[in-house]
Length: 336
Ligand code: NDP
Image (tube, helix red, strand yellow):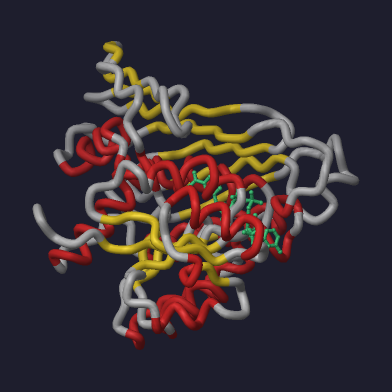
């Protein structure tokens, strides 16, 4: 890939994640760079970003004009970084523009939306990838490798939690239409992914779930406050997962006959810690997950190579989230 032109990325939605993580990461990428933005504030934020990142003002769009990216040869990839309820709109606009697309997690708010997004990209002949940054971190890749090497030696007992105490102000993360749910699609999704990594992508057979009584029912009026769930696999492997908007957690542990590991913090942007069979692995501090994620997608496009976080994986996680909510609502195990 040396000497190849970098692919151009346009970020859709200049909120916290674009500003704090993706924009800065695009200064470190080798195969792609920031060349445009889509924002509800093109004159303020849009111009500031154009100045800071050195792209022309003609590459600033708003949500009504983003279809014109079709005519912009500088841009190869659009990246939806808006709330999940808006991802379908962004992805369909990207596909209609003939641009490859990255979609932030969770992919959408329903499996039906995922299906429409995948169909639109297939029809347009563009690729659709997920913003699943942790798949590029060496520790999480180690978890995947244990499955690939069949190194567990039998059923795996897993526990994982991710959540944080939410504030009191407006947050789309408690708006069901925009978020699709509460902390389950926001942070619980990472626990789901770790378990599926450990199981080599195998789907669980049965899902159970429950929600404890809400302690802040006014704030969490549309979505769950805390949810606990289990996945069970045919071989007896089991995950006990939790995600919460009132209690902090950030860990994943997996124990089997031949291996035991613990990640804590497991899901942060940086400074993860991992123990494998009682030994702490060498520090990976400073590893830029987002830069590696976007570069891997750009490289896959440039080489017609495999995407390790394709839309099918985003859809899979939406199926699992949906099963957890159904299990919680019914109080019954949901078979998959
Ligand atoms: P923010 O609320 O900080 O930003 C969202 C941005 O989306 C807004 O600033 C706005 O950008 C745009 N937007 C357009 N319409 C709306 C609307 N109706 N309500 C709110 N925002 C709107 O959210 P985040 O940046 O934290 O999250 C964005 C996406 O990124 C989500 O899917 C989230 O799950 C994901 N994310 C992923 C992370 C990861 O680690 N992979 C970490 C954090 C978030 P503008 O003003 O430019 O129009």
